[in-house]
Image (cartoon, rainbow, N blue to C red; front, side, top):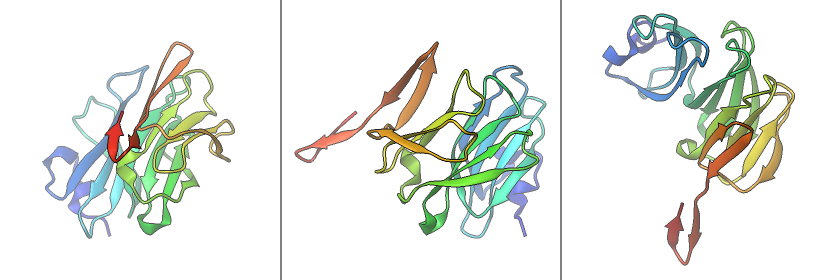
Length: 178
């Protein structure tokens, strides 16, 4: 059973949930998507608002923490959501029908959800990048069917025009650098 966290029409008015990620539809700024983390006994959710955040609908409920979310600039019905599934590692959920159905693929065995990010490809609705943890940058070009490792880990991803940017973190002699 879901807590009041995901039955409220305004997720900001709950005390047992936190918003962990936010994405705004690039074609319609009234459409917002959030990833949530519930309390110890509450389910997490991906929620959508079509009225600028006045009301919310739960689109995906699990007992996982949704840490990142990205909408396809090519097709607003395509949403990528990154989830930490307890000790099971990281999974990417993808919907191509605005949240009615989702498919999931395990992408990482790392147990650190805070350092992961996902970015929908700005030109290819079937492609995205995922990074974080200890397993590096990965790319899917087949609509979340599989993920191929590409390089070192990045903790933030972004794109401008046809260029992918990433912020990396590494340690030298016990000192961290970004």
